[in-house]
Length: 389
Ligand code: GAL
Image 1 (cartoon, rainbow, N blue to C red):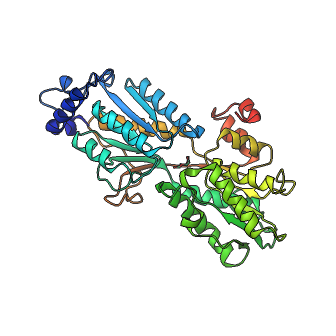
Image 2 (image 1 turned 135 degrees about the vertical axis):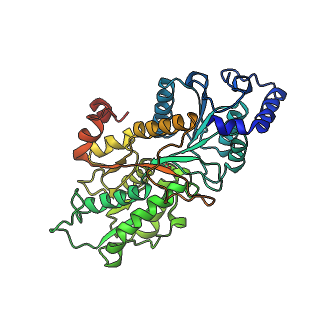
Image 3 (image 1 turned 45 degrees about the vertical axis):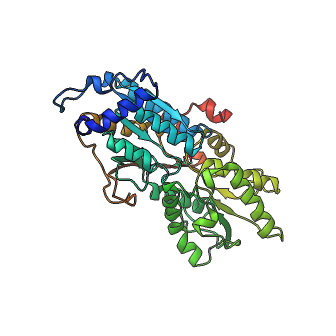
């Protein structure tokens, strides 16, 4: 948003001096105060503009795919891209964003690690007139979040719980009641994502609202009694932490011969940790051989292969290519001095304001629609699905 940017001339100069004082050469930026049209209002060509893209981690393949998709689509549109991954380490991410602001990037696209830890970075971005797009994860506690591109996160949770109910035979894949459903009761355990990630609560609420009637009428039982978000959350979405919690649950609650039938998992990495713990305790190794039904999210290739092999039951496919396209569309609008088109202006309150959002739809992946959803769309090749990499 050049107009807003030029309105912050003083802040921009401060940044330029700071840059000079730090000895930063600003290479690749080439778009600092020198190319500012005197009157403002004019938009610079894409080729002169740099976009900072901050992604959380490379340990999960989805974020690598996101980073690649955003970078390549921005480059195709003619922008220069500074793409950084932060190893799931908050100070690393704040430093990367500080650096981008110091280099006077024209716009920031940020998938935060901790949605509440970026307030001072966003203050600085706001002062410098740099528009900020929150990518997939909302950034909380700041008015300087200009737009949010994501999926319908509550509905992702609904889909996760739906797939669990399908796996237990209570629903059909189209979501309708199975008239021949087994009576149950079924023993389940529930896991949530990282408590510092705004999405985790949306996934969990969507899922628990969907499971509630079945919990209320006794079709589903949580033998551990652990159903509160804070108790079942998994910091940084860690596979190891999830495996450990599942092992602990098996010891504390299932060592007397009780059988576990299903596990609500909010993310494929967590699902694989859970499955490892279950197999280690003698379940399975496949669903057919008694492995509990485990849900997931992100259609990570390792989990898609497990679904194909009848080990993990389901995942949620969020097409990162589409998310990248929406973020590029929003970026282009801001850089042309316009407001990007939102399709939700109510749901995502970050504590300071409701952030205009563009929400995409997701799909449930089962063994029988892997080809249709993931291979035919070109997301993976059949070989990748077979090899799991
Ligand atoms: C969430 C994201 C999920 C999953 C998770 C762990 O913020 O919406 O799709 O990727 O992080 O990385």
